[in-house]
Image (cartoon, rainbow, N blue to C red; front, side):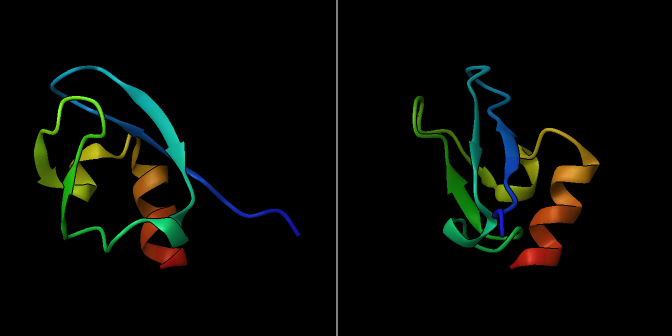
Length: 59
């Protein structure tokens, strides 16, 4: 079985990356961009509504 992933995007530095929902905190938790260390709620880093729904569903 393949594990799902969510696409993330930093609104500050424009870095794009992917991660598995199981390796991320809850969508309403503060999260830090691994490149520029901007802090926002994780939900604000999801690229699309579909990515946010996937994150919420699989956590």
